[in-house]
Length: 402
Image (cartoon, rainbow, N blue to C red; front, side):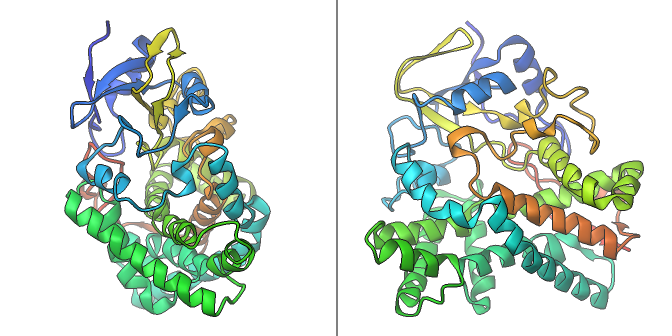
């Protein structure tokens, strides 16, 4: 029997993935682990097995089931809050039904229609950076505001509410928040969305997601009001800070590889999308989200995962799988196999907004290096402060100048 590993592991430094991932891939790709509350889980570290379990209907995404793996007290409190589940925490056929209500607005074609608006927001933020002058914190001035302004407009949130919502989202989403604070922040956000939905019911503009869902799903009776509130809440809290982190880390990686940066500047139409895929592979901004609960006994790579046991599919590890990505610890925007990267998950529950996230990262890095060709770090690289090594990789700030 393989030894039981306390999880999560810690990054040794900076953006380096935990060293345990490489060892697990080679020696024990389905390994027993233990969470903060003592519960047993299975760690899935290779690309092949990750894809298998994320396509297997015997693994559930319903977080209220007994034994579902949570990583912190705050996560447990959010899962047991009593609020209606969003589609990301449902299994088919309910998941298919409710995800399908949002998906038409997030298809690759729909996102392309949003690209001019994303570009305008990026240009406005860079205009403000130039007017202010460097050095400044790129995270505060550009990387964080861009995805949040995009999603706020997408949902239909008034600009006057942006700062309040961003502060509450940060508390609710933080793995370091205590259970009381995380639950209170989530409750405040749900109440805000409830009031906003009520306003859209009175006056649906038809130009934002909530208005569209009011008109096409709520009024015909396809979804309840509480389900609409929770769907809007999901879109508000899910993934925007992760996109900001990917922008920050992408800027650092490109600056660390000036030859690749020069190639991207010379051929942006081809290499900005390629760089975005490599950023999402190399950095894997959301690396603890692929959690499931076995609802039947399942054999995974010869290991029996029993009914009622949790698994965590380690996409950060799978994105460094040597059998899929040659020289996986090298950042390389010319890599050919990146359609296999699993930074957005895989299978039924792949991130519904993956194409929006890609577009935001593409616009961000393309705009920054086009408009600020001399963009560079304003402090030595050794002074950059990264997040808690046991959490998703992130930055407290990114001082830059140009």
